[in-house]
Image (cartoon, rainbow, N blue to C red; front, side, top):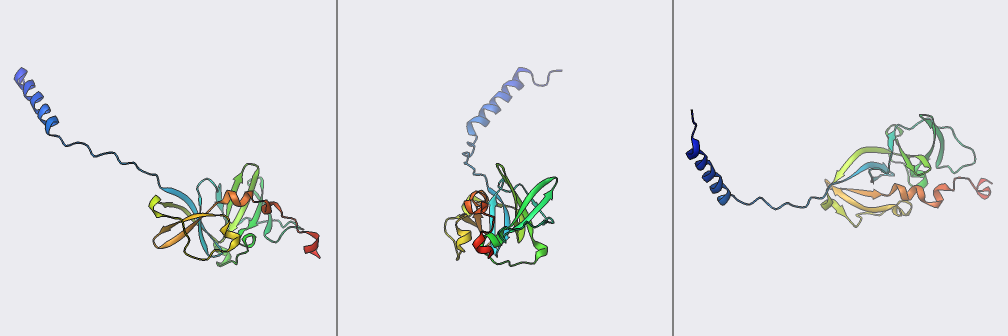
Length: 187
């Protein structure tokens, strides 16, 4: 039994032509910009965020073995899954005072080429995401000089400013490798 034959096909073609003739155009494709993602943490009361990929992992503070004759901001070395991890107190290195209890502290593990170290921070807030329109060039407050040289702008989210810290610039800083206490300081 024929369901419409040639007359039915002609009707379908006419409907398709009419639909195409009166169809509204598709909306223009808008360029989308991916959100910026980073790892949030607190150092000396400063809410900071570093670009994802600059921090390898976040750990509870590991047990460290002190190293004699080093700067006070070098806490020692820890064995993390068979690798020796030098642990640096980031507040002390930057000349900042600690503002949270030790129970909240975390260690950001950084690997940059041959460098492998842990940066002890006061808190880790996990991964954060910011929209490009949340970026700010200025800063809304006084920043300590020790920290300011590693900042690369900021984001504002829910009335909070998150300063972007370049962790790679920090661990590439020449003074970061000057860990031995000089003989004049020891005396």
